[in-house]
Amino acid sequence: HEYSVQGCALSECNGCYSYSTASCHGAPVYQNGQGWTLHRDRPPVESTVGTESVVSEFGWLISKGGKPFYAVKTEDMVAPSEGWECFLGPHPAPSSVTHTSWETHFLECCGGLKDAGNADMAQAKYEHAREQYSVAIEKMDGFDEMFGSSDKLRQLYCVLHANRAEALLRLCRWQDARNDCERVLEHE
Figure 1 (tube, one colour):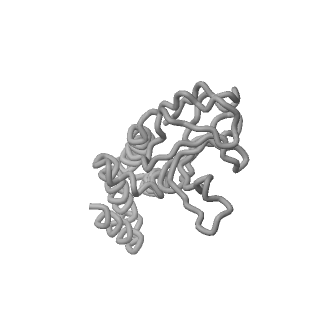
Figure 2 (cartoon, rainbow, N blue to C red; figure 1 turned 90 degrees about the vertical axis):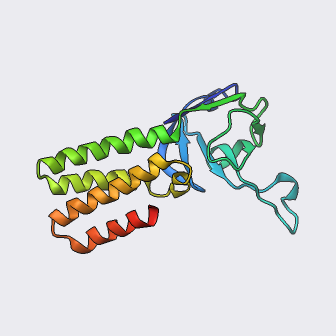
């Protein structure tokens, strides 16, 4: 799951941004090899900074060292491709920010872990299966907002918990299995 940033005045800001496993305001955080971060945040509106009533709006930022260089206002959970503006960075702002689907990313990454766990279950390797399911669940934790717009992700998240519950039952860890079953019911 990646983004590509192009057309930015700062050449080190351009290039490929990969998913970092972190999240911010319900959306994934991406980083490039130069230490730049692409993330969703809620920065203050510049004209209200220093006033008694600072207003904040959701948007996507490209930042480095905690400083926002480029930004675009949006409520979207996916970074928009156009409309980027300069914050602390020189002109021009990025002209293009393109992405692959976060749904595709989670389905491939966590779906592969589910499949590996299923193979372990078939070989009675219950502890290893539990670990595979747990890693997948940890990758998806914190992205609950996205499940509302993706039936496939919600279903995968529920299957991972149900499968882990089965592994936990086989390991005689009753309460942990029950907890996973309750998580499934919360998301069904």
